Image 1 (cartoon, rainbow, N blue to C red):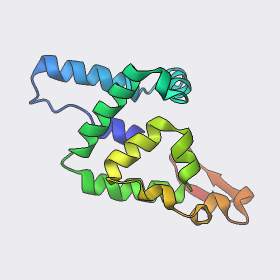
Image 2 (cartoon, rainbow, N blue to C red):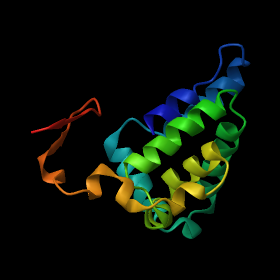
Image 3 (tube, helix red, strand yellow):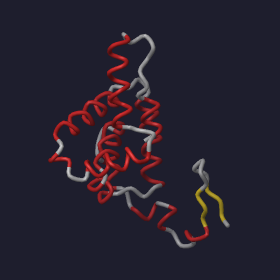
Image 4 (tube, one colour):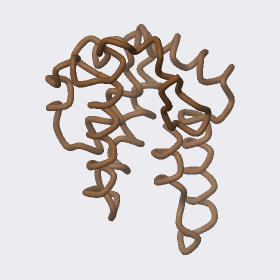
Length: 139
């Protein structure tokens, strides 16, 4: 989500009122605060009860769909989905993540990925350490 947040950073040439409003929306939906993110995820678990939240998320999805570097972002998103073993189940249970990935990738093909591709689903995963910077090491 951090990559998406950074990609949606408003350009400085955008008029200030528009930039400020969009940045507020981006900060609300793609928060760096783990407590706010957890609360948002809880709301997203029953998105039909929060139509105003759905509209905000769809606005960000549209913005990422029109991003000038969308093709490169899609490559990264597909790699992420494959490496993390994201499948249809994750797409159905994490509305925010799945909506953003749908917007970046342009379709829902990532949901059909085989979960066995992920290193998390391979034998010996208990010896893999994921570091804070996202790198992996064998112990």
